Length: 91
Image 1 (spheres, one colour):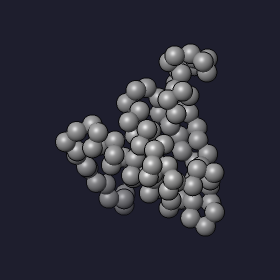
Image 2 (spheres, one colour):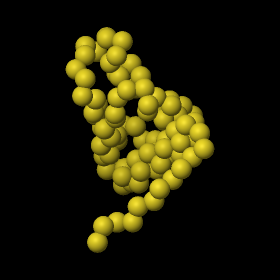
Image 3 (cartoon, helix red, strand yellow):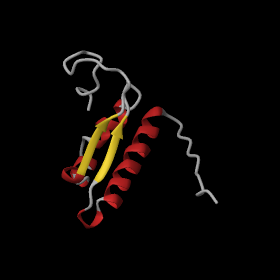
Image 4 (tube, one colour):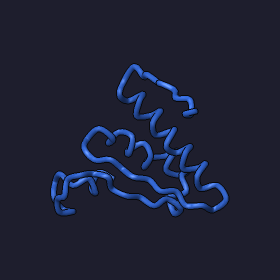
């Protein structure tokens, strides 16, 4: 039997980004409990920008144990790190 799924609809993109950032932070906290590592793959493009900004700002940035998080880039584009379309800057 597959796990239950929940569909959440927010009225604005900003509200969706806020809820998403809160959820990502909660999952990281859950996964890193007891000193464990958490692996986080980040997608590219402009869509996740608001979520990433929230994760990088107070209060969430101070609540996430970033030293225990291993971040991977999941973007399919291969552009130099200093290129304007590289998501490394955004993250």
